[in-house]
Image (cartoon, rainbow, N blue to C red; front, side, top):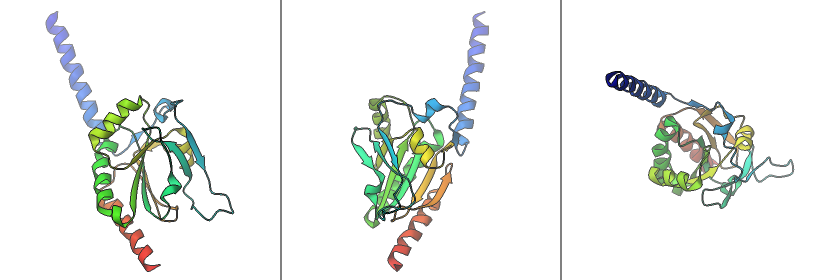
Length: 198
């Protein structure tokens, strides 16, 4: 009897590990249920579009979201910079795999005007999320997002979903799934080169 129970657990653990490995190899993780889109009532989420008379910001929906330290952050405060806007979650293996690339890109191009903003779609306690962010060594702004901001950006259906926003606040690229660092770097260089020509 004990042997059968041990065999059951071995098979169960094997299947569990194999499913985890399959998840790690996927390029994007679908966001299937609304709980994963963070219905955390503590979060303050405000998404705005520029009014016709405003010249200050382009076609990327502006937002004000709460950071983990509860300070608010407004996307348009980065006007004049190239922005990598990454929708992600700590439970998503492809999302976590891309984080070191964003850290490296920000370090390399910060002086030229690159900023990275991570929109975290986790539910969970801030303290737990803060410790995960710290463990990953993230050196850029991370805000808590939810349904309103994902809908404003066209309905984020899979993560990671990453946008490149130019110096004038315009969305210029959208990438769904894990992409090589070079993909982002080439677009960033192109935007910095355009700025020099102007």
